[in-house]
Length: 349
Ligand SMILES: *[C@@H]1O[C@H](CO)[C@@H](O)[C@H](O)[C@H]1NC(C)=O
Ligand SMILES: *[C@@H]1O[C@H](CO)[C@@H](O)[C@H](O)[C@H]1NC(C)=O
Ligand SMILES: *[C@@H]1O[C@H](CO)[C@@H](O)[C@H](O)[C@H]1NC(C)=O
Ligand SMILES: *[C@@H]1O[C@H](CO)[C@@H](O)[C@H](O)[C@H]1NC(C)=O
Image 1 (cartoon, rainbow, N blue to C red):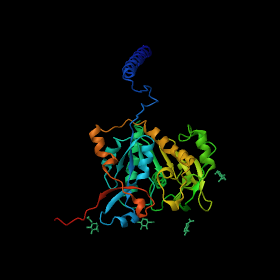
Image 2: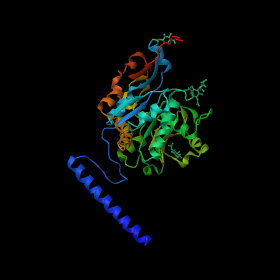
Image 3: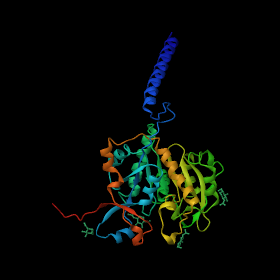
Image 4: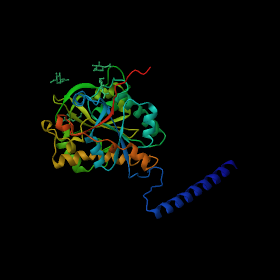
């Protein structure tokens, strides 16, 4: 009796769901919209907007703009790399409260933690903002709200340090890596999310040519993962060697969440030109490195977050700021965006 009743209900429910699905599919089909109505495949968002986390103003650039007292900056190459793969960018400021990050993340489709040079121990800085974002992204993903993060260089190190739990002795080693290198792929890298669908010609370029740009003084090595039992959640997909032959992790991904990290700089091949750095700019180097933001943007297209309307979108987009030509004044970055000039505060009490 009970079984029979439950079965009838179940059949009725399935029938209702199927009917609804057909109706929805019919209407959207007429609109010509691309929809996928099964639960495994989220609808594709072809207007993704990506947040890039800013970081503390660099010592060098503060020296170049002493009067402006900028609080933070973003190297424009990260913005351009995301634009080239089909998205727009909003800057994410440092030094805000958790609600600021949560609110912004509810409107955007993914976050890039860029590289650079800043300490993780400064309060209200890049690492604190990164921690809010990392934790909120975990909450979103746990609630089936797909939300990717991509960490480049310092941003990759931050991902691993956040995953280990921040502490005084940070979970990374010192190294010296200033050369372009190939990727030494792991045996099972083709099982990863990042490389499952990577074209073989690009994989071959990455594996056999010195085209991934390294510029880091810290490395994440196997030992760092082992020490904090991170292999459970993180899959290493390739290694490179530093200038002295130390093998470090070059690409990694989280098994549970759409979180990805690369130790090298895929944005520099196309968008950074400092001559003394000898970045590889060949057609092959550009093409192969372009893969990483293309991959990330495909992940971000699975997020359906939007701003309330175009006006609100326009309030946030990075086009509200004008990048400066920092290459001309000796910076390693061709162009940078700067944020929040810190005004001299007078005592008003
Ligand atoms: C942060 O770390 C750096 C490098 O280890 C150190 O020089 C600096 O004093 C630290 N700053 C704070 C606020 O602890
Ligand atoms: C990195 O290079 C600097 C300068 O060449 C050197 O002083 C330092 O010991 C090197 N560090 C490592 C970990 O190799
Ligand atoms: C590639 O990585 C494997 C696994 O860690 C290592 O045994 C091998 O020596 C590396 N090859 C090169 C060329 O560095
Ligand atoms: C920039 O900071 C310096 C030192 O704190 C201060 O004297 C100056 O007034 C600031 N500039 C502006 C425009 O607020």
